[in-house]
Amino acid sequence: MIQTENLTRRFGDVLAVDRLTLSVTPGEIFGFLGPNGAGKTTTIRMLAGLIAPTSGTATVAGCRLGRDDSTLRRRIGVLTETPGLYDGLSAESNLAFFAQLYGVADAASAVGQYLRWLGLWDRRAEPAGTFSKGMRQKLAIARALLHEPQVLFLDEPTSGLDPEAAHLVRDFIAELRREGRTIFLCTHNLDEADRLCDRIGVFRQRLLALDSPAALRRQLFGRTVVVHLRALAPEHAEAAGRLPFVREVRQVDGKLLVSLEDPEAHNPDLIRALVGAGADVQFVGELRQSLEDVYLRLVGGAAPGTAAEAGRPR
Amino acid sequence: MKAVWVIVRKEWREVFRNRMVFFTVAFLPLLFTALPIAILAATRNSVSTGDFSTLDLPEGYQALCGGLTGAACAQYALVSQFMILFMMIPLIIPVTIASYSIVGEKITRTLEPLLATPVSTLQLLGGKALAAVLPAVAAAWGGFAVFAVGARLVAIGPEVLARLVDPLWLMAIFVLGPLLSLASVAAAVMVSSRSTDPRAAEQVAMVVIVPLLGLFFGQIAGLFVLNAQLIAWMAGVLAVVDVGLMAFAVSLFQRETILTRWR
Image (cartoon, rainbow over all chains, first blue to last red):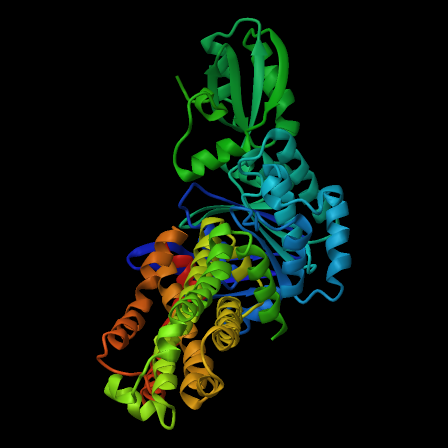
């Protein structure tokens, strides 16, 4: 549904997007993660046919960028970073205006359908300027969906929302996934990306990593087993370290963190070796690295107090 | 064309909620229509009963008045001083509407969602330009009609009224007016692209009124008389200037430029 090949954009001497090559399949929710100023919004603007790439090509919803951008814009929906609603116009008028610009056949019916779906029907005649942030965001998402686009670009859809409103918007995005829409989601909320996205791309001017959240965790951190012992001694770590399948052993907060390829196959041998070294094993579990750990490692820094920090050798 | 009208209707619903815009669009034509009628009413006795000869008037009026009597020519000369007011209306109103419309969209960040629609930039600019030009031209033409009727009722004779529909006035009101409106919209687009305050944009774009003020005061001072030939020249030059200004405005109103260079 989205394919880019060496997509590049420069602003004078500044390289905003560097040779982005990726493919997003129909019905996929693709998370596009990166720090502020990484070039995410520029990428969305290029893929939406709003600004031209400096070099490279892309095809979105069957349209090649720069060839028929008007058709492209008809096939996609864009939720911009800010809702961008006409505050003086009612919710209904805001949506009706865009429905007409998109050439929606029965604009009034489409507007009514989305207002009801989003629970805004009772307030349809009220100016958008009187709405809460969550309601404005929902209205903006409805605006992006009115013409039933094949691809939806969502730029920070839950940014600045309170937890309840953010939850509503996330539920809405999950609902869109069930409808089979292709969604390109830019977000800073890593938990949101972890829960919603089939795959994520970590981006900072260029694509740093691209895979499912689980695969990225495995690639970067392997799988780590946490062994709680009654009393941790150096010989326990040495016994574990001698095993051929163990990649790394760390002692953190009285626990043993053991990185290995295949815990299901190797845990029995590991526990036998520890017991053989005199360890009293209390619990064994798997340490789940958060997507935040993955992200921070990729973009170049780990914040204090994260699992990555706790896992550092002491 | 449908998209253009959709934009025009939205613009009107949006900008006329702003009191400053509404005040300008409603009050300015009223003022510029009432003022000359009031002056004519106040001076009607001196002009209509005075013993005027066309030789008492500036040289240009002798040719302009043609067969009019001295008193009628004096009335016509007085009425002609106000012609430029009816050219100011289509110049001032579009600046106000377009400034509030474009800078307003920048402030509320509504331009990007608008640019993400399939509408072409020409349709977008056309919608915004028409939304600014149509009320201005309608106000100028309506004001002129009210002025002609009002002037006839309070002061001028039928032979002077007939002069208000001669080629000079028709060209000034119906040709020069819309051309001035276009120039003013182009100026507003250019200034708005660099402004984040609609009032500041409006004030800077009002520079377009300066040449017209020069004409107004020049005519009052007797430096020249607006005649059909001068108006035709002005229309020709303005048409060429408008093409250049609109081309520049269109180049500024591209998606790429708006999203990457407008501040």
